[in-house]
Amino acid sequence: MLRKKSGLSQEQLAEQLNVSRQAISKWESGTSIPESDKLIAISQYFNVTLDHLMKEDSDGNLQPASTDGSHGLSQKMIAGIVLCVAGIIGLILWGLISIFHPTVSAQISESSMINIDGNGMLLIACVVAIIIGAVVLLNGRK
Image (cartoon, rainbow, N blue to C red; front, side, top):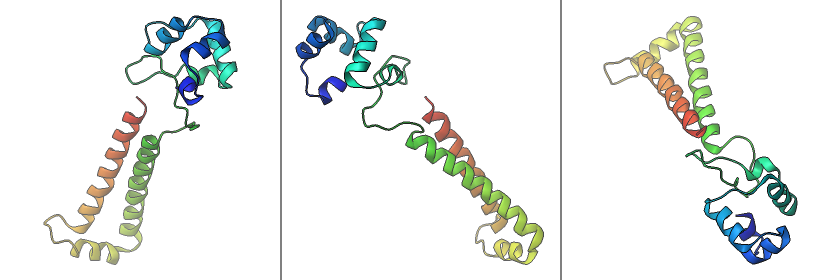
C-alpha cells in the first residue's frame, strides 16, 4: 500500500532496498515476509514505524496498517463506547428520576401505548444500547 501510494513500481522499490523485484512481489502477495533488516529499511524509507508495517488483519495475517494516518480507536470501537456509555447514563438517569421525582416516573409510565409501561421501555432501550455497544466493541477489536 505504501509503495503504491508513493507511486513506485516494484522494481523502483526493489532498487532502493537492494532486493529483487520478485522479493517485493512475494512480500506484497503474502507468500513471504521481509527479514528484520529489510523491515527496518522499509520503515525508514517510508518514514513509518515497524508497528505500522506489521499490523495484523482479522484473520491473524500480517498486513500493513492503513495509510490514512489514523491511529488509536477505530470508528466501530468509538461507536460501541458511545452506545455503552449512553445506555449506562440512561439507566442512571432513570434510576435517579424514579427516586427523586416519582411523578415524572409515573408520567413516563402512563405515556406508553404498549403493555410494558414507559419505565420498562426506557429500561429496555438502555439495556439494548449497552448490549449493542458491547457487541460493536468486541467486533471492533478483531
